[in-house]
Length: 602
Image: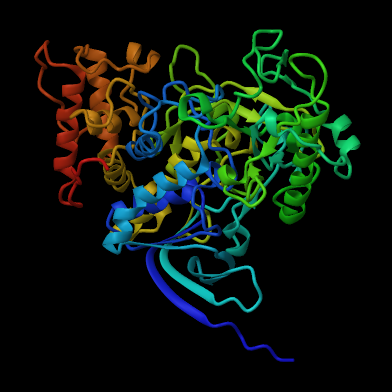
């Protein structure tokens, strides 16, 4: 029997964003905000990835998140989540994060952020579509074909000037013929202490987790039913326990509803998403624990099978919690734990897709490495990147890898998102916009969390929009210092921090100037040793020279001849005001190249 070919719907945009997660939303938001015509093609009907379909709406963030180190748009997302609950700082009361909440709150917040751009016609959102194939013309990607999973589903052929791969596993990379890597590069590649010994281990992908949400209603306790297939094997091998190996090389011991014997807070409130005492109704907690981390198969090489088996593992862990988990009051099991499909947003209470800690990643000659994120003696920040497109901060946190069960951990200093790490070597108009940036497995483990993925996506969307505006391939744009300054000015004007300066937030009239110069290397002395740059304090002669040198770099003028040195400063003039004056000179010098955007951040 001959089946007719599925219908093909052509669609054209300036920027195509492929993906459903936080990186995809941030990329689409940034590109639309810059005035580009954007199509967001999402696999799932719910947007949000980690915060919704992957069921981790307990945000993994850094300790400065309430005051700085994130963009204005990410802060708006957090504010909208809290507003959904009429303002509680932490609606779930979970202790793993400053902000734990139900997935529906994330979906509502993300849709609200995107809504003005949908209403204006700049943004079109397609859901239920997966990339199937691509078309290339030489070094350029010209279109991506997407369709639903069922046979005979209509095909959307999406053409664009620039494509952002914000899929959870870097799905566009192999389709587009882009060089990519997965698993561990091996210690020999870059000398990283957390990499696996020897050469490459491409199959050693980090564990994935199919989380689930439960409520505790002792009055509704019921028979747990027979143990799932493979229960005994899972129980012994994982193992199932409320004890966990800590980052400090000590075993952390927990109890279910009471503080543990070592003083650790309860297991129940670890990732609690709904605090019934504060909100009314029952508590609801997300179960994402070492006990249901799945590392038998690579989620990149065997996505369907990995999800199925990871879900079986979670079912087994739930059975253990209901039947064999040590009770705080003696005895075993909490039969009142029941799945909460209404909160999970799925028919059975389990995540719609696994929480992926790793993606295919761009293969480039100079990826971000462990050493690039580590603390620098005498400095408050990691090594500076002059091509910064955003900020992130999280420790390098490697869970079990396939075939290598040991976890690994190392601290980081506050770090940046290098724009060069988002640019594929080929095709030349493809950008990484999620966990798939050009970073080693070790370094990528610090970028993978919620605000890190958002920062990568936002930088990619802004770069894609600027590439369209300037009719330059992204790699050429990032490689041209003056073009890069125009892009960084746009980012900073939109409230995206490029350097860690906690006391100069978006909205401060000095924000854009301080961000540009700090990213260009202007921080010295005490300002380099602290995250606060004290913009109101005067600058000494060395700091004045550093500011002028940074301004010259912004103009692509290493000799400093094109940007005249400022006259001797009034001793009362603050460092931040000097920065504003110098950046004004840079903007005047760049004005013949292109108008410099001074729009307020969104």
